[in-house]
Amino acid sequence: MAHESAPIAGEYVDFAKPPRPLVWDVLVRLAREKPLGFWGGLVPIILMILVAVLAPLIAQAPPNQQNGDIILQSPSWAHLFGTDEYGRDVLARVAYGARISLWVGIASVMIGVFLATVIGLISAGFGGWVDFVIQRAIDVLMAFPSFILILLIAGVLGPSERNTIIAISIILLAGASRVVRGQVFAVRANTYIEAAQVIGCSYPRVLWRHILPNVVDVIVVIISINISFAIIIEASLSFIGLGVPPPTPDWGGMVSGTEMGYLVSAPWIMIAAGSALAITVYAFNMLGDALRDILDPRLRQL
Image 1: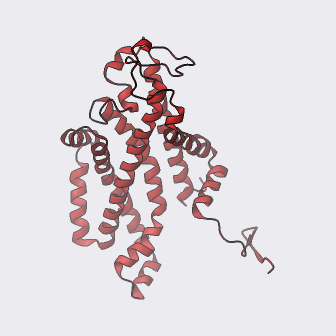
Image 2: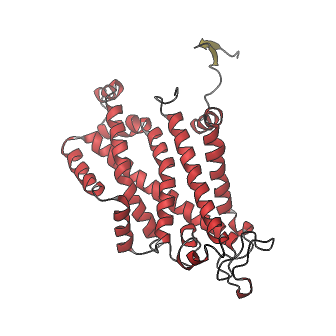
Image 3: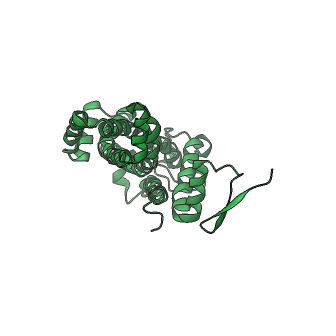
């Protein structure tokens, strides 16, 4: 069968060729239109994920193995990032710490944004007293400063990986639900939503089949931008002793506690963990900004 093509806006589109998958299309546009978001965002994130997955192969020793003979040893071929005050290999702790920071950041954002999406859909979709009650509850949650509230939640629940995820998720869902709610209101005003209801679609079906697919781009941007925020919060909680408890390797924990006393005499301890944290946060910010520009049609021509 011969390929048919028709001119559209000065270009020829091959109708016989199946459309590219959405994810592949986003990746191609990201590489072409936002090279900084691709090379400065996506690529470092992929590399950091590989470091976390391949930590047993990268580490030169177990992350919690202590050796009194090599305490505070400067970087060398035997220990590329040096050792800490307990003789533990810093490279191993940074590599294994990537697992904790990435897992807590991604898991907390996924849970928080999932709850925010459900709340936003229900609030804007049903409106009326349902929207009023939900939004007043969100107002109460947002009335407290974010970091004060997360300290309260983490302090009540206690320091652990699971409780850190719960605390960050609660903080994220308030603001994210407001964004989703506003987007649902904008989509609900379109005529095809009214048409779907006219032909007999139930409102839950309209929410699931017609409204939700049109707010996915906003949800993706919320996720990509908030992961960097979640990683910083996790590191901050670990820094003050309310995050992942020691001796679990964690980037925030590596720059806190007794190691602060070695800022001058053994700076490699904090430089390694701090650099990994900074690179990861920067990469997620770059990727989030690029995805926002690509997925938001109002910003594509800017």
